[in-house]
Length: 406
Image (cartoon, rainbow, N blue to C red; front, top):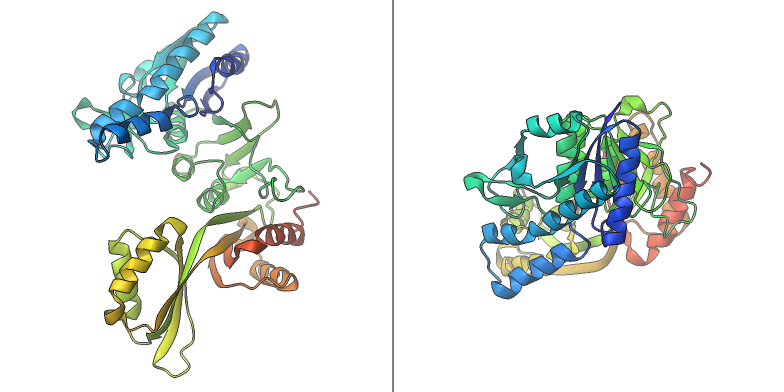
């Protein structure tokens, strides 16, 4: 007998028919003799509608009342799913975040989980009752409802799995696992049987929309085995687990891309100590997160070009900040570019093998794709290229690292 936490996202519980389908999946797990807790999101579109109501009433709303409103989406789903389970003969009970309770800090709208008291939850599960838990929410200081921010239901599920010491946390979504790259672009993309927490974290933060970064961080911290599966197709998913569980470590596990990138080049900046701080300090103050940075070699010893990347949504704000500081920074001109994409090659095997970056550069060169910026970490190499080459680069790299043949 195993203890399983199952999580279903908004599209999986999008209407009553789909909720009944979820109930059947839960029953199958119960019929195998397992103890089950289910975490659900609001029905697809509902949270957006609730957020919109808040904006219509008060654009600068009180975050505590905002949480009171947006947390109701999950309340509807847990009640309906508990009913659907009871209808097919499964003992079930719904739980709001405050009823467990899931304690959070006071950062309303993006609260972090501090503790979960699972005493009653575990007692009921041991008696064969399925716990249907509202994702995305907890109870903050002053007994106020608090929500965990976008993708918070994944975080709720992993946190509950850690707290009840579940054998596995199954996250059901509209994709059937984690692929070597985006299958919509590369037809030969393959589903991975297993992937390490570290690789998944890189993929999640680099644009793969399968799992929320925070939930992967939590799974890694508490060593919760997470399985990504489809709500709509009966097929094995991808297990996100410890490195030790994976016997055959691939050199490269996946290739991610992010279109949410922009680039700024400051031409002829003074080449002196402290210049980087004077550029990036004001950007930090304006909440602009800078990612990759390249400083060109100074030919005359006095001036250099500084290039850096940032989120597309921050580009206008960054340009405004830098223009305001032009007299202090003494750059000649500012060149923005939003037609760029970041391509990243990820794999645990890189730690023990040289030449991964070299292969990436050579492959792109053969396709006449110019690399604008490069950054590396222990298990990834990222490059910035012109957006029009996205598909060509992904397909070429997928082939170059032998991912087509698996």
